[in-house]
Every structure is written in structure tokens, then in C-alpha cells.
Image (cartoon, rainbow, N blue to C red; front, side, top):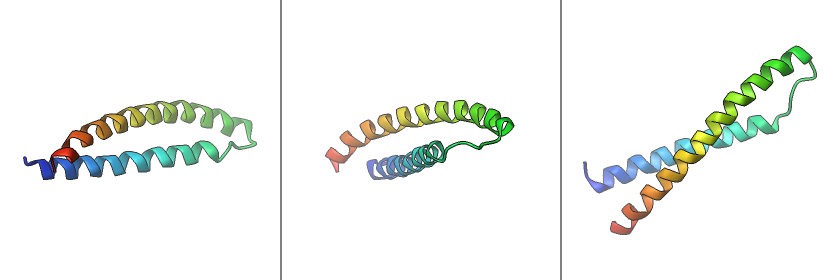
Length: 74
């Protein structure tokens, strides 16, 4: 695999993760339902989304770190 291909893959992953993080953050900003039963489900979903959000941010940081040395060689 050549450096150009790796760079393309990393930039695609960067875009994917950025989109995922933005979507999760938008969901958090929506607020919650007035219905108590619905709030319970939303609270459980928030825990899952929070974990996915954290993992996506960590992965994005790693991708960004990987892009730096590659961009210096191109």
C-alpha cells in the first residue's frame, strides 16, 4: 500500500469520525422528552451515545496524529 492510499484512507476515516461526533453532539443538544417513560429510554441511550462519543474522539485524535507525519512526506 502506498503512502498516498494510506493518506486517503486516513482522511476518509477522519471525515467519518467527524460526522459521527457531530451527529452525537447534535443529538445531545436536542433535549429530552417530557414523557417520563421516554426519558428513561433516552437516558439509557445517552449512556451508550456518551461511550461512542468518547471512543470516536479518541479514534479521531489517533487518526489526526497519523495524518501529520504522512502529510510531511507528501
